[in-house]
Length: 157
Image 1: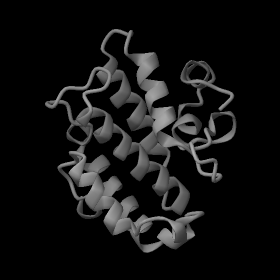
Image 2 (image 1 turned 120 degrees about the vertical axis):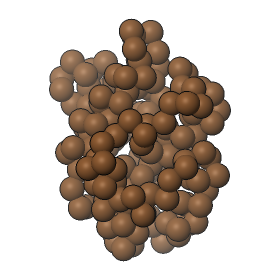
Image 3 (image 1 turned 180 degrees about the vertical axis):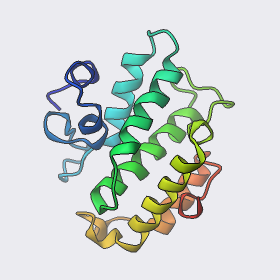
Image 4 (image 1 turned 135 degrees about the vertical axis):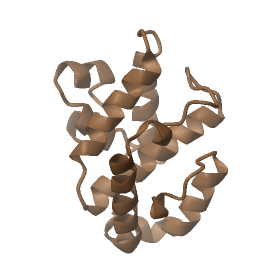
C-alpha cells in the first residue's frame, strides 16, 4: 500500500481506501494477489484512535463508504470483509472498541437493509469474486464471522 488513511482522508478517497483500490491496495500476507482488508481497517483505526470521538468518526466514514456501494461482487466482498474486520478487532479489544459499541447498531434501518441486499447479492454471486474457488464458501465465512462476535446474519438483514 502506498497510501495511508490520512492521505485517503485528505484526498477524499475514503471509499477507495476501504475498498483497497489504487494506492490503497495492500497485498495480503501470503501475496496471493488479494487485498488485506484488515491492514487497511487497522490503519484507519490507528489514525482515528488519537482523535476526539474516534468511534463516531469510524461510523461516519463507514456510512460514507456504505452509501457508495452497489450490487457488485467486488463491492459486496469489500463490505463483508470490512464488517468482519470491525467484529474481529472488537473481539480482540483492539483500539478503542468496547463490547457495547456495535457498528451495525449505529446504522439506520435503511442502511441495515442495504447491507442485507448487498450481502445476499454477494452470496448469489460469490463465484465472481477473484479467487473464490480457493476460499471457504461464503456461508462458512459467515458462520466464522458470527463466531467473531457479529450478532447479525448479514444475509437476512
